[in-house]
Image (cartoon, rainbow, N blue to C red):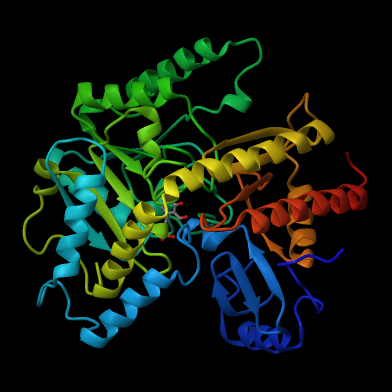
Length: 451
Ligand SMILES: Cc1ncc(COP(=O)(O)O)c(C=O)c1O
């Protein structure tokens, strides 16, 4: 089958990629994983070209980092301009305007009309760590509550807060103390015989019981929640659940933190996913698509909470670098100019429509779910038992790669296929990518003899 945008002319890896792969094996530890076995030469919009001249449609977007597209002209222009002026002075040595401008814009854009402040860092994990530090300082409490299947990073604290044992935590203990894990709403795996309303009540009661049985609310500094779970399998919780947890936090003076690192910047059809739930978080962690590929992250929050830390207690050498700030400002401009929120919504509709049609065809599809353009398929061995089917997802991803589409798995059991394409993808590219998923499914199901 030949395509217009996807064009894989060589085996994967191709000859040049093979050479690089050998050097990678020699000099880079295997602990850093990689998906497709090739190396990029050029990236533009939603298209990646590898070192052997193969082209791929990108449905992974560097794991949700490239909502504004690869090398978006606005971002490239801002970076060139910044490089010519100054690259790095260290905000804690000599400050610079882009940091202030970005803080001001994000404070105004984040949900809630209260006064807000913004702190910038480098990575998602660092943002989560700092949100916890700030919440602890403010509340003078130590406990941190997270949720089953959550992902918050790979540093000691955030690895502790993360759920999946293998590969994220296995043999990396001892873990950070005072981290507690509560159950998260999971509609697809709602106990049989329970209505959606009963399940909402059940899971909120479980949360209350957890605050009785696992940690006292007056010892909890922060509850950190992904509004839609990313690595955990694109699990979209109910509004009642998110609102209920936020309300319980309010009652007990617990800082409610929305981890928007994967969900933010138009992915779900709104600037931030938490807006779908009509909840105003006390703090929000942001990163990934904020910088369009530049390493920048942030904590946005209520001024009185953000002000709890004293000078020198927050920050870092490269935290909120000028280049990161300029890239993020360009992304915010692009979101407005190209209405990326609306694009996220429309892409989501198209993807869900195609995924639902696939679900009509294949019994191994247990669930199709999503919020905006954060869409996924959960695969099972049997629709009755809902036993996770990881093997099929790995095979689909490989078959898609061979045909020139990059996509990702997710979920505690690796049995979820997820898409995080740049929101600037054209209709034609999107349709071609979805056609490839369909063909990859056909190939994978016949290779594994499942339906
Ligand atoms: C919700 C969430 N929080 C935190 C992180 C950690 O971000 P980083 O890998 O930049 O440390 C991620 C990364 O995937 C994420 O999805």
